[in-house]
Each structure stands twice: as C-alpha cells, then as structure tokens.
Amino acid sequence: MKKWMLMAAGTVLLGVIVIAFLLNPFIGSESISAQEAEQSVLELYGGELVGTSEVDNRFAVDFNKADGLYTAMVNKATGQVESMKLIEKKEPAAQLTEEQAGAAALKKVDGTLESVTYLKDNQQYEVKIKDEKNITTVLVAAATGEIGNITAEPIAKPDVKPEPEPDAAITQDEAIAIAKQTLDGEVQEAEFVQTEGGGYYLIEIENEESEREVTVQIHAIRGETLTVEWDD
Image (cartoon, helix red, strand yellow):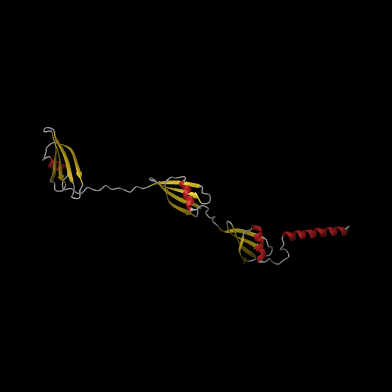
C-alpha cells in the first residue's frame, strides 16, 4: 500500500515538473541567449526585429510594428517578457494627394483653389478657396477625405483714398462772382473740373428778367474768364 502511494506521489511530482517545464522552457538553464529573447518577442508580438541590447539582467529587444517602434524587456534568467512599451509612434501616411484633397474641398465650396497644405500634426489637408468676397479654409482628412471644419474670412478691401483737388487760387464763390460780371442772375450750377493746368470752374447763370442763360468757364488758378457760352 505504501509502495503504491509512493509511486502515485512520484507520478504527480513528475507531471508537475513536466508542466512547469512546458510553461517555461527556460527553467533549468542559466540564461537565455539574445536570439532566444528575440524569437520569444517576435512570436508573442510579431513585427520586424530592429536590434537587441543587454540591460543589467535583461535583454532589450527593439522591433517595428505598423504603428511604431517598440522595446520589449526580456528576463535573461527566466525568458519571460517583463514589459513592452511604444518608443516612437509612426504617423500614418496620407492616402489622399494634394490634388484629391483640393477636389474634395471644391465639391463643398465654390471658388478658385488658392493653396493646399498638409498638416502633419493633425493628419489633415488645409485647403484655401477664394471667391469674390471670401477666402474659405476647408480641412480635409488625409486618410479618408472626410470634410472637417469650414471657415470663411472676408477679403479685406484696400482703402481707396480720394484724390485731393489741387490747390486753387480762387474759391468757388470767387469764381461765381467773376462769372456774374458776365451775367448777373441766379446760379443754376457750379462745377470744378480738374486738369493738368490747375483746373477750371464752370458756372451756369440764369437771368429771369432778360430770360438769358450763360455758362462761364473760369480758370481756377488765374481767375480769368476762359469761355462764355450763351444759351439763347
């Protein structure tokens, strides 16, 4: 009976040892090799091996995956992966070209395409479209072409300054007084006309008593009567 119990206990102990060995193939060896650490990491996480270095009692296994560069720390004695962290994140490549992003924006906003700029941090295209009144900015997702925020800014109109009239030697009232020397009456119209020679005044006067009407041209600098035109 005792012999049978000893045999059963030995069998159980042997089974425990075998299971433990299968769960951790590195038990019984002093340390694993760098190649074994790399194989363990790649089988566990996949990716492409970059390099391996020793840090104290661990292997630091660097490997690339689609989204970035990772480092896994492997215990040299046990072969267990103790930690894994992302070292450098890769930005996904833009799937849309600048031309495609511009075309997508023009489907939403009418106008003329001014510029297309790729914003790496946001993974978007910034498209500027101009029309007669506004410059509109459209954000387009580089990966999907989805239209994001749309903002419009009115185009600033340049300040148009009126051309100053040249300094005249005589005022309009003075020109009227000179014109009334030709015909005294009621002023119907007084106009200043600018010319390279300094300009002139056109004074239109009507006299109701005589039923006469005249247009007198007065030089704005010299105050001379240039022409007299009667309206009979």
